Amino acid sequence: SFYDNVEFFGWGPKLRELLIGTRDESCELYKLRGQEDTLLRHIVSFVGSEWGDHVRLTIPASCIARLYYYGMGRFLAGRTREVELLDNFPMSSKSSDAQGFVSFAVCGRIDFPEPSELNVNMLPFIFGNKESLPEELQCYYDCIEKCPYLREEVGKTGYLTVQESYVDTGKAQRREGLHIESPGAFTKENSSIFSPGREHHWGFGMFYEPDLFDGGIYMASSVNNTSEVFDALVDKKINGIVDHHGGCEHLRGLIGPGTKLQANELVWMTDCTPHEALQQKESGYRQFFRVVTSNISHWFAEHSTVNPKVPVPDNVVIVRGNKFEV
Image 1 (tube, one colour):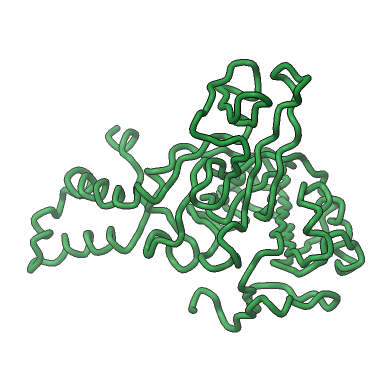
Image 2 (cartoon, rainbow, N blue to C red):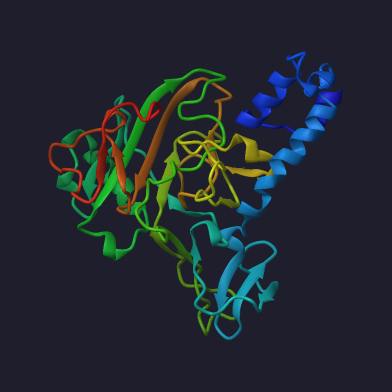
């Protein structure tokens, strides 16, 4: 049918105004009433493209590396001998924030502990200190330690989110719709840096040092295909490109297909990376795990979990009230 081939456009303020205009007899847009699936859809495609200069498509992390003799290289599928040299990348290139070249990376796997209906959000803890977690959450310490955070994070405050719950078919446990982390959540511009692994000089194009992850966010779930991340970066400094809570459904047509995460797969991503929760195909129990590294600027008290053992650092602003009404 016609609807099998149309491009999907998410709800946004400009689409809302266009649709309202088609219902207002005093508006020129009223002439387009009844043409929502053709002419109006075509108009919306041009409206959406105004953000194109501020959405950057990125290279899959597994397809880029620092070569020992030749600088940066991009691979067709994984780090093999088939490589394209990227002359415009210096040897020391790092991918950073909205101007980077990598938006997320699979960085390992975790083993979830036995579920016990835990539900905490942005709970402060100290990297490298199991005792800084409440007793009921210490079972997640091994998951935290599987995150390849830098040694510089040890002793600093991180933020743990765990949700364990039964999810019905056709429902999503977490936030649906395309979004990035809320603007202003991280303290400095270079809060999420990816450094691709470097080829060993004796590796003959087959062995590479580990990738390095500075800051950013780690995430995993226990159910296949219930989270999706995208090879794209959104410049959230641009006014209006996302809403106050990072929502960017209207950018979906600009970022291409996503990658569905598999059960227990651990990924690192930036705060500019579009991602979303997906509906479950079958009813069942799901566990969700997330660690946010130390460089945040705001902590929303009403939506976050207090840890009696670890206060929110003095340099982080505690926001009172409902963040969806701020």
